Length: 252
Image 1 (cartoon, rainbow, N blue to C red):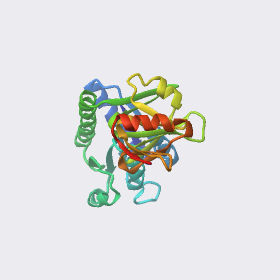
Image 2: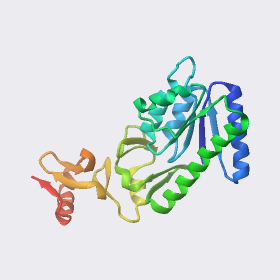
Image 3: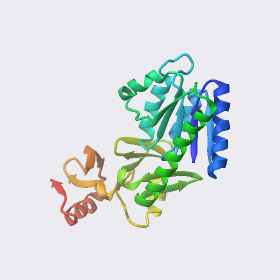
Image 4: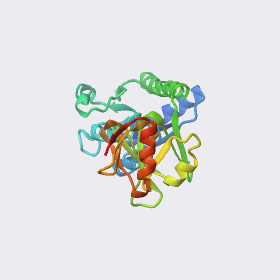
């Protein structure tokens, strides 16, 4: 389990770290704690975080009264499954978070005494632990490991994966989110033992369950959620055969 803390007051950083270390010991959990007050570092963590991570955010950071809320939006865009908790003296902001559409789990008041403060932190950690267990039991995941960088996302939420300009960088496009991951399409396909992906183009692989049809005129493979992927000339016949076999939409 990874926990990320954005807090620009060193005293508060140390306070949270101390309680989480105690909680990890008491609950016999392995927790990797990453804390910083630097926005650039935190945004880097966001882009490379895994599924169902826990983020503790101060709201007022570096003279920006709404910084934590803005960062929470970036987290939600990169990781729709993240658990977000605000640790702040500004509990009045609880009523406006809906404007930012970040779905915070909780607000923890910095002014709480140590026992209550720790209890609040522990409640969030136990919630994440429960969510992870439930999802592992009930959810079919896409799990991918490339050069020690791991990703784990519910397969049903993935639309397609495409190559991007940088070598060994992929853009994973899902329902309401996009995420850059390290890897190559050929490596993903080689590890696809259940034949879940289909490649209509050398730069794209598509979740077969998301395919709804083909637009032959514009050489596009039609997907759910209004998405589409290009079809290379050499793959037109393969795509047409797939569409016909599954009785999907076909626009000549």
